[in-house]
Amino acid sequence: MTNADAAVIAPAAKATDPEILRRRTFAIISHPDAGKTTLTEKLLLFGGAIQLAGAVKARGERRRTRSDWMQIEQQRGISVTSSVMTFERNGIYYNLLDTPGHSDFSEDTYRTLSAVDAAVMVIDAAKGIESQTRKLFEVCRLRDIPIITFINKIDRPGEDPLTLLDDIASGLALDLVPMGWPIGMGPDFRGVVDLAGMRVLLPEEGERNAPFGRVVPIASLSDIAEIPGIDADIAARALEGVELAQGALSTFDLQAFREGHLSPVFFGSALRNFGVEQLLDALGNWAPGPLPRVAVQRTVYPGEDQVTGFVFKVQANMDPNHRDRIAFVRLCSGRFKRGMKLLHVRDGKYMTVSSPTLFFGQGRETADEAYAGDIMGLPNHGTLRVGDTLTEKEVLKFTGIPNFAPELLRRVIIEDAMKAKQLNRALDDLAEEGIVQVFTPIAGGRQILGVVGVLQFEVLQSRVKAEYGVPVSFEQAPVELARWISADDPAKLQKFVDAHRGEIATDRDGALVFLAESQWMLKYKGEKFPDIKFSALRERGE
Ligand code: GDP
Image 1 (spheres, rainbow, N blue to C red):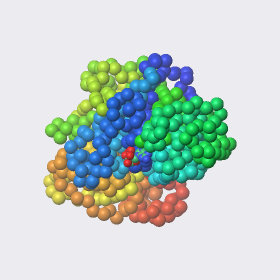
Image 2 (cartoon, rainbow, N blue to C red):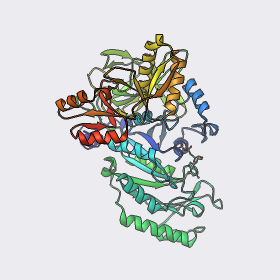
Image 3 (tube, rainbow, N blue to C red):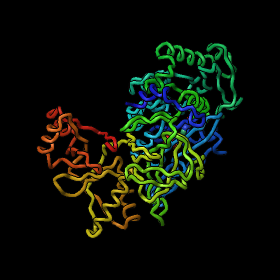
Image 4 (cartoon, rainbow, N blue to C red):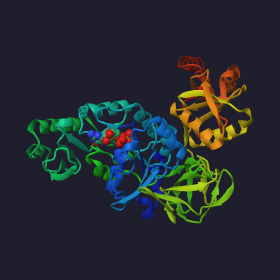
């Protein structure tokens, strides 16, 4: 069952606790540079969580050099306060989950998506869909996560809005419904029409580049042309665009949005505050509250009395002097109270949760209470791992934490053979964090490491040395791609494995992986062995 199915079934076991109902737990997905950080700052600003924009990350950090990044990686801790940002506005309690850092660290971002109930997809108006947007969108689709689209930077020259909508809709096979429309773009930018509210948002009088500050109600769209300061031809083009879009595109349907098939679209400028409040209102009004979560044994509903949750992210060695870690737990049901004893299902042991952390804007606080939908940080010494389930007593295992096929594969070379044991521990820890994937060839031989982006190898190398005292280097592996393999008929899978022993490895959880020397070879094997499923994605714990 997917989240969307669960959303449809949910009413029977729906939460009635207003504290749960008012939670909105979401993430922002985008390609680097589309404006995620700027939008995050503005959401926090409108949400009252920060006084001044610019607090999310200092301007100077924006274009980090590689060495800066390494240093920051070694210091750790910097990104944690902004991993979860909680703020309240108009009675809605927003949990914004972010995955700051270099675009290379995408597994982390993917895992974050397992803990949200909705996503905002930020698209640069000049660029349309980009590679990272597409990847992240596909993860959202896999989980039927409802998506609100924010087309950013309309104050800059960009694609024509209709062309953009068309490209996004066809590129992602997603129904789009514009909730607003830009009046001109780039140098012609004059403001935004709020189609649902029938009003026009304009910059402060006399200041073309100022943030939005004026609201003009309109009775009909043609009134746009009457607004002083909006040239007739710009108004005419905007009107024509809206009419064409409204004729060609769907109308808003809450159910279709919540099932992940339809996305409302806001045109805006995060930098200049256009569209940000409407986006927040849309999240508050339309995004679902905490959704039921699927466990192997049954579906868990947010309104259930007993507390349940799962770990979707672990951050290790935050303080170099202590081997402490923070496990980020998404609460799936119940009302958590500090000091509660929770069952760590994988271990079969109870743990007293005495110092859970909640994250407000830039700060952290020890939480006395938390509700389904909230994210708690639990300091621990390595007992909690990604994918782990916590409950009051029931034996449950939540699903939905994926591993993705790495894009780069290397072999690890250890300089001091005496340190093999430490290396194994380091790889195990860092695999847990999502920094690396470790594949062990079934025919023996050295482990093969997989990452999504090349910078991860450098981070890995520096952390293994700094935190575990093991100097390592990497060499090219004779393989290019890794794919998890499965088949409906276990005998056929076994036959394939037997015939390809030199190309098969197991991942950390023992799942079988085919290591292909090239894309061509993978395609060839796929055609030759139609009963074998080659998958670029695997659910953890399955
Ligand atoms: P991220 O990499 O997705 O977090 O993107 P940032 O928020 O760091 O933004 C990338 C660049 O685009 C920065 O220079 C921002 O100032 C700029 N930017 C973000 N939003 C807007 C916008 O609405 N209009 C314009 N003109 N620039 C923007």
